[in-house]
Image (cartoon, rainbow, N blue to C red; front, side, top):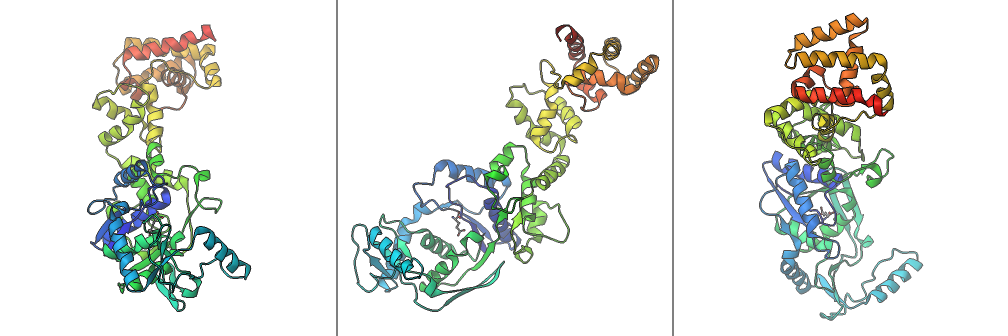
Length: 464
Ligand code: GLU
C-alpha cells in the first residue's frame, strides 16, 4: 500500500488538511506501506515557500513522518510533458487553438441552449499543432459510465457525457491540476487515494486519464467535510483553523492527532488513542459518511488529558517558551519542575499553564479584581496579612505541618475561619484568590519575595 498527502502550498496546514494527512499516514502505517508527501505547487501565483515550510513544520510537529523526500510538482514538469506527448501521439489528446474569448462564447451558447457551460470539442478533429496560446485537451470519451467504489462513500457513477474535453497542458506549458495529480499518483504507484470530498468531482476525470494510459486504478476514498457548530463549512469564523495556531495556543500534538482521528473515525466508544494505538486500529470502514462537526471543547478536554500524562521535565520544557516569550529568565530545572507541579492540574493548554505560573516570575504582583482589593484591605484582612507576614518572617523555612498550625492558630485567636487568614496571603502572593496551594507557593518563592509581596499589598491602602 502506498498512500500520499498532497497539499497545495497556498495556505497553512489547516484542520481539514491535517486530518487528511493523518488518515493517509495511519492507513499506510497500519498496512506497513509507504506514505508519500507531495507538494502541489504548480499554481505559481498562489504557492509560496513560506507556506511550504509551514506545512512541513506542521506535519513534523504532528509527528506524521513521510517516507522519502517531499516531492515537488514544479520539479516534474518534464515528466508531465512526456505524458502529454504520449496522449497526443496516441490520438487521445489534441491541440486546441481556441482563445479564451472563443471558449467563453462556446460556453455561453451551450448555456443559452439549456446545457452545461462546456467546451464543445471544436478543435478535436482539426489535427492542429502547437501554437502560441494553444492548450492540449484530453479527448474525453463521448459516452459511457465512469464508476468507482469509493472506500468511504460507496458506489459513485457519472456519465462521461457530463464531462467536456479537459485541458491537460496549459498555454504556459504547465500541466493542469487533474493531469499532474494522475501522472504523479500513477508514477508513484499510489494505491489508495484518501482526500477531502471536495475532490469527488475531479475523480471521474482522473479515472478517465488512468484508463487512457491503460494504468491500474487506485482505490479512492473521499472523506466528508468538517463543519463548524453552525453546520457551515469550517472556516476562520469558527476560530483558529491552522494547525500551527493550535500549537501556539498551547495544544499538544498528541491531543490534536487524537482529536482529528476521532473526527469522522470511531472505534467503539473509545476516545483516547495514542498514535501507536491509532496505527494499529485505524481502518476506513469506520470512517463516517456524514460531515463531522468541529468541537473545540472536546479538543481542549483531550489536551488537558495529555498535559496530565506528560512527564514533568518534558512538560516544563514544553511550557517554558510561553513564559520565555514574556521575557522571564529561566529558573533551574528543579524549580521549574516544582512550578509545573503546582499548576499542571489547573490549566488545559500550555499557554494557560504558563499564565497560571506567571505570578512566580513577576517583579510585582497586580491584584486584578477591585473587589478582592477591597476585601484584602478591610481592617480584618490587613490584620491577618500582617500577622501571617510576621510569622513567616520568624519561620522563613517552615514545613507544611508548621504552616498549617500557624494558620489555624492565627484563625482561632482571631475567631475567624482559616480562609480569612489564607486568602489575604494568597492575594498578596499571587494577585488572585484562586491559586495553587499556599504552602507549595511558599516552597517556591524565596522568603524575601514573600515579605516583599506582603509589604507591597499592605502598602496598597495608602495609594488606593
Ligand atoms: N492539492 C490538492 C489540495 O490541496 C489535493 C489533491 C489530491 O489530494 O488529490 O486540495
